Image 1: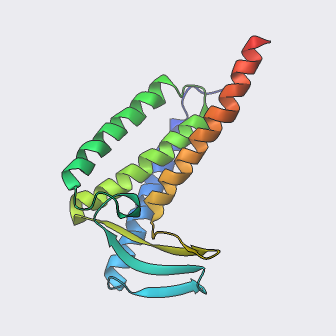
Image 2: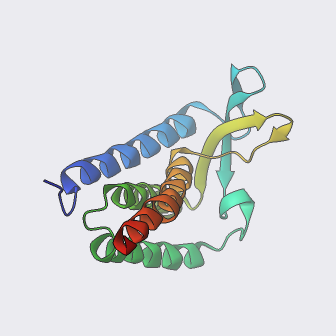
Length: 163
């Protein structure tokens, strides 16, 4: 039987991801100075202690009040969409859970540190990707999962409904 909501999986997943995000950030803050870098895989992957006072790619620097308000609106919207659009859709529930965990992870940083701790530093082909963290990875993966759900699964459902 298909479950309407998979809270027995999604709630522990969200807490695990938020805890992993905060634990890794705490480890960086306690063991590294800002700007310190440790190579993990040559120049491809490094752990670099960085602080972001803005959004992705450093946009909107020092706009904390704006981020507090936007994050709260996003969290309410996620809960709304989880209840209204995601029943019986485990893939959509996963995407919303990932986005929720990522948003809360970075919100905690902004609230208690006044900035976001970033540390995953990658270079892909000759592109030096912006430094990010576990919460950012959750946000990105959540958006990818939702796009997949909307483009693939939703179109399958519409196709099946027309048959």
